[in-house]
Image 1 (cartoon, rainbow, N blue to C red):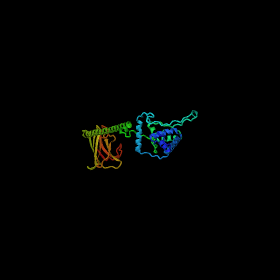
Image 2: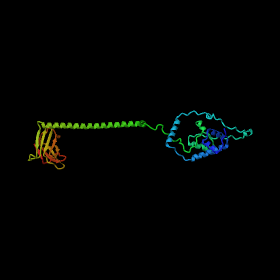
Image 3: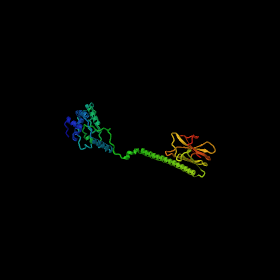
Image 4: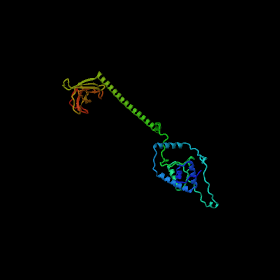
Length: 351
């Protein structure tokens, strides 16, 4: 194999990994033994690093970013293959290393150790690693990066001017579409608790409503029962054989004037009173019925009443003591709250 001509263009292509396999191997062997080539290669690497840092960056489209992240995820999940032994890919290529110049024993002891070999151009996983390697090469500190595969040594990747995604970029989720069950599962406990609370509230509201309905029905039944008993007592009073029936009216009043009828049973103290053609009263005034006992005791109030627009009024079963024989019944006009003794004159009276 012939040694390639030493020039800056070949070294630049070598640094960028653009040479063919045979040219790359030949120039690599030359750089290992040539201090001038190594110095110029370091200069080129520094220039390339500075150029890469000064170049304007352009973010690739979103579709390319998604494809790149998906490929990275697949490579991370895939098992790593066993590395190929060094030299297996170049077994068919003979090593073109020139013979070292003879060194006598006198200069061997004082000869300086050979300089370290130049850095082998390799592919880098990110732009930051590429820039760091070029900076180290410019300062003369060579470091050989250990590639993951032997094929990375055979041909270094060319330098690009756009930036790569850093390791801190957010990776897309493996499953971007979640079902409704998967979304609601973390909140299942709260949803069940809310449903139970709503069910308890509905049951409690229904129970309160049912209790109110039962109370209303009970009150209605009591009212109907009391009305039924009162109706029975009224009928009994009207049909009693020993009842007193007294008509009360003004003295000398015409037949069409105010008139009242009293039905009284002394043994039970039950009384009913019905009046017609009554005159309307002024404000804060009312009619009051009086029972005047036959034994000469004071008159007993038997209830107050007011007439309606037609002059009609009634008193049904007032609270009266039993066993009092009535001598006379009378009606007076009293204050709105009634009185404990009659106020003369008596507007209606009868015995």
